[in-house]
Length: 226
Image (cartoon, rainbow, N blue to C red; front, side):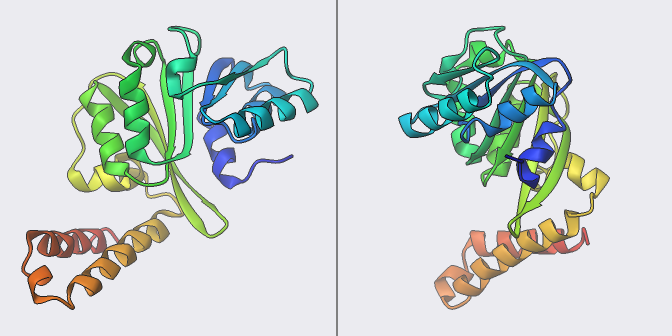
């Protein structure tokens, strides 16, 4: 078993010796990789659904790592006790769902040293929430797998200035560092917004809405980044 580019990029944000929780685990592949490579001494993997939970148990058992990886059935951070792990990892779910799961367990969030987040969408809502609870974005990366672009966010406790609205969507660190896949990511954002604009342009009513003009401004701001 080898991780794809998305999860491989996630591993780079895990500090050596950390205890991690993989929330919404995918067959337990990520914690298995982290423990096998020595990056983590111990891990917890959780899923709210019994199917993925049982699949993760099988994977961990086959890897002979039952003594180092604890598989738990439950929702989000509810499977954890305060100070049980250093870093919680959320991959492959929407940013709005991540916000909800973080809101559900503030005492667990307050005990963490870091969060590694790979949202499928809802980037602005997620980043804005992190800053609202006095966390900040320490680092970010972009990964590409099977033709799809993914944003990965590493957040830490500590109050910092809220990024601009545009940076909340595209990533403040990504905008500053401009990694290799940055242009491709921005092109995707532009294409998605233009599809919406083209659809709305067929209706005079839609063309006169504030949303239509906001989208036009958004596209122009994105184009200026290139």
